[in-house]
Image (cartoon, rainbow over all chains, first blue to last red; front, side, top):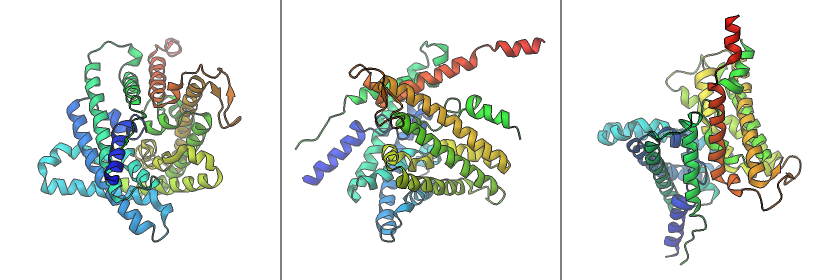
Length: 197
Length: 212
């Protein structure tokens, strides 16, 4: 029961309270770049959930069984980014070969994810927070879900923004940033949410 | 080599944050007090310059197909050096910037300049490009820091002049929201809007020169 509570509070934190986009500023580039349409935002979100989950697992294993036993913790950044890059490449090849339907849906987003700071961020935060294997997995997946929620909400607002009238200097990127700011303000309402058993 | 043109591009017309819209995460996340902005800006400047030089030196050796992976290894090496140096000599800054120092690896500015500039140009030009683009990034960070610190905390120069900075607005009055994540989005949005306005203004001086 204890474990379930911990996992639940990690999940709640990653999705709402400490949302990767709105509270921690991780993964803003794809968030701004791929949010013009709800469909594409959905595709990107699902791809991110997948990669963040898998990456959390592999970077945790690499850290625990390679870096720590050999006292190479200072190599974390380099090792993690290589693991993530290789992993994304591998997932891409695997999907292309065996699940072509999923590949055609996610394919174009996968290469972009290597340079998504949310993925490297979740790997580093797992270690920093001292999470164990299961906790890392949960944090990775729910962090991805938080990203999906944020990007889909944002994309649906942005679709309407296209038809609205706004000052010329604010057209495009600036108004999108302001919108994201207001969404971040809404998400602040979740702060202080805690699991009490 | 066109030093003047590169300087202008880095600082204004091709500014990495305001015009190319790269490296948003760190820009918004850490610009709450002046000290953080300065530290982050200079770290990126150093890493960008070093990685540009090395990538430019290796541009004929690196095979085209695996170039991105090679760039990432070069960048990650310099980021690790800066990360460890900062932890040793400036532990308070390292603590403030936290996970965003290792995350410079995936900062699109550095990979973007490696791909767009250093992999095609000579070593000297790439080094200058690194310095100027880094300066362009730094000044935007400093502006954001000053605005957010002034409006959000009512102080100036936090961490540099004194631990909490000089208090300008009395306590209780500043809009705390601007120091929180919300403020990052809003202030950067307004700053980019101002840039777009300034750039799209009809240029009087240019047309006058032409008519002469």
